[in-house]
Image (cartoon, rainbow, N blue to C red; front, side, top):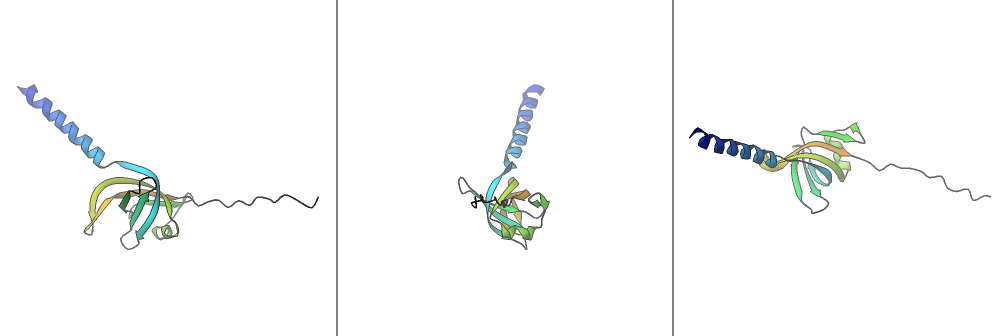
Length: 121
């Protein structure tokens, strides 16, 4: 009798843990930065592939530009960002969010000057 009760409880607990892991998945990739709120430190980003949009709390995100630490307000100068986020519905000040930004990274294009061929010969 004990095994008949114990086994379903273990399977049920395992399924609950797996569902929680899926519900709070960590995702990372390149996104378009559509909008940001400096007062609440929220960002709205969209995927390139399917235009899926995510409203994220970025108040505790590590923000870097070209590998150097940056501030949230610096993000307003960029339209393409790499974001590592933890997805899961949450609320902040009565606004429903899609998740939390863990890291936001910006890579600026390198400006290289190629020397022009010498045509004086």
